[in-house]
Length: 600
Image (cartoon, rainbow, N blue to C red):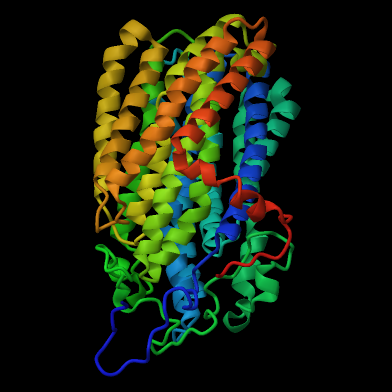
């Protein structure tokens, strides 16, 4: 039974099955199409990313020159985590979701979305420009801190001064991306890394002979500008629309520019919604229909339009993101004392091994605005169910990729990189590191998914940065212990152990202050794809071993691992896979550019 928002007689509340949807509700069909679109764009970006790494390996190999560039590349890697993938999204997606929810209820006064932009964007630009200038000036000190073992740091300093400019461009790109995803527009945000990698590749090809590895650093700087420019027109169109007219259904959510997934959910009131507490209002005071715990109005965010954008929240998000990205800093710090090329081997291994994680994270990228919107409307039960489904589905996707990476690592590295200045010795070293890295892919994926449950409420939560700090300390200690006997493989193993510990602590810490996920249920669901991955890895190793040549070995190992994983997942019913063949074709059979029905 729904809880009353106040005293006095109330009209009868219809049964849940017949009640109108909340303004932020989305259908499974919409999410399937949006996820398919995001995954397709992510794969295109990943292919270009591999092309970028292949060009870097072909032109410069794996030695002192590439080590210097990769030290400078630490800046854009950190900036992408803080300003695009995690930090900016954790702060701004809930903030824009809250503003859209207030706009959908017809809150008196200025348009909440435009007010949020006016209050946040100028200050953000000023802060980012100042940070970029400081990094340019302090490049020598930064290089000395990141990689004290480099024999000649001058090249790394020159590259760092070029890549430091991406702090401003990545910040603008992340702001646009968060705002567009809150509007449930995924086309432009999904294309930013395509533009980024294409510009880097073009710059390296044109200027490598004249500038050396500095051409790659210049490509990073220009690519960051391309990321912001790719999204600015789409965001401007949404902000320029009048609030009263922006929410017109327009053929069930079709965007004017033909982009799929660009629905204006929440800009208008759902059909039948009553501003005075009628049947269309989502559960007054956030009471759950089944009386379940934790269904209070998440952080009371709707009461105050600025509450989701507080100093405490920004600090908590930044601390977590810095802690997560610091694993790369730890790797390069310890690897700088190893023979030349160790940093490059770690980098190439990481870039390839994380492809399955990047694909799995597309599920979370699409559904995070949905979770944040449900929280803003007080419907924590809908948010909880969404998070639980996402965790198991993402685990299945990343563990399938993990099995393939472990089984086929030598063949994959040989096919991708062994040409030009990249030698057979580099292939063997990179493949050995990549197999160790892969052991931490599930931990990386779960951390990326679980932390959204803490920050989707729009409140500062200090538990994620605290447990991320524990993971970082574990990584440092294990790296210091393992780098001596095992070199780069020991560093990769410390990375996997530290992030897995963080993921476990984040799962155990979920409760009423975040999205109240049912931990025993999630743990049981995760055990099934883990068991399937163990069997699939063994089958992939057995299949790849007898094959002759890298192409045949990779194909055989990939086929064996995939078939066994899918068979075991079916037997164990991992992530409800037995039910997938029926709804999936129905969900994705329409072309991506058809009109999307987002409410049900």
